Amino acid sequence: MLDDAEITTVLVVTAHPDDIDFGGAGTIAKLSDAGAQVVYCLVTDGDAGGFDRDLDNGGMAARRRAEQTAAAKCVGVSDLRFLGHQDGVVEQTLGLRRDITRVIRQVRPDLVITSTPERNYARLGPSHPDHRAVGGATLDAVYPDARNPYAFPELLADEGLDAWTVREVWLMGTMTPDHYVDVTATVDRKIAALRAHESQTAHVEDLDGMIRGWLAANAATAGLPEGTFAEAFQVVVSA
Image 1 (cartoon, rainbow, N blue to C red):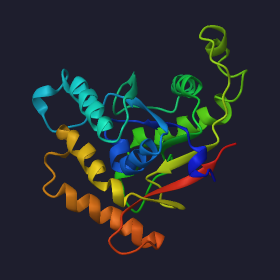
Image 2: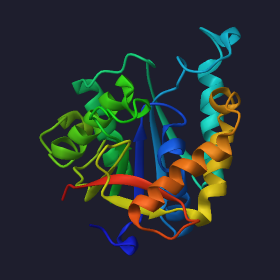
Image 3: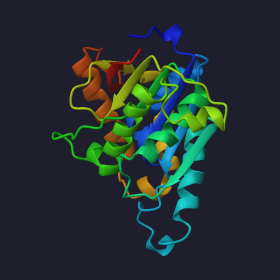
């Protein structure tokens, strides 16, 4: 597993705006505070989510891009890349693999964070079909696509993007976490990032309590002291 000092560049690949903030914004704040360059890759604009029906078919995508940009600033991230796939119908296609491979070769990260491609039977929220499709496509892009110079040769021939080997992947939303990050010092920034997604979280009566409850349970599972908070991941060593 990578030491903290070895993580200098991080790419986060998720289906929707707010996915990283629910799953890992406290960790992202810690990584960016430590000097890592963090880039967000959003496969969709999230236009099929939210509760403001007045924005249906126009306006929701722009609103959610703006919300994610504001949320990212809370945790020290300013480089966001939106791929523009349609929300709600993402499939694990060769085209999606190519799009994610392109970003991996552009960013050249040590660490990729994405959603688990497996269904979570304990808690259904992480198992949105888009999450699973993006997680699977990202793992395929990490191995074998991004490191294989013969995969998507047009990326090299037309865009000058050389092959790149990602060393490690952390999966969010897994039923089998094996790595916990103490985010006690950054939990307030995580919650601020989530509040920036007003179209998604304004209706939650006790967002602060809900998030702290999840993170406290993670910390207890990890054996951390009472009063601490943790985010949970499954580590996939890819290099």
